Image (cartoon, rainbow, N blue to C red; front, side, top):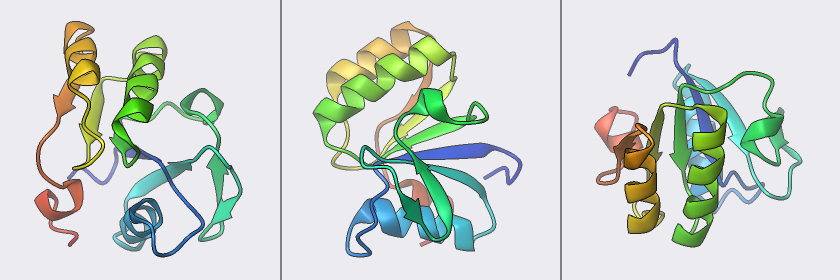
Length: 122
């Protein structure tokens, strides 16, 4: 994993029992550049949780989805409209509709395997 790439985690929650929280905080602990997006907003690990990708101060290099598949569909629409070039759909967030739509738009899609395991964080 390139530590200079900005990763946006979609589905960040204030609940430590949720994967969105664990993935976001573990990426921070690993020293990666990461921003949080969650529908409720708020603060997690001292960082602002933005309510959408368009609200982020900087365009991310990679979007990591940790949301239900129907939410991944909406996220891919936003990814395409913002010109983001890579999305990683965590297990449980994969939508075949979103995969097809993203690939047609030229977005690099990873829709198998866990980002955290693949990158050696977990």
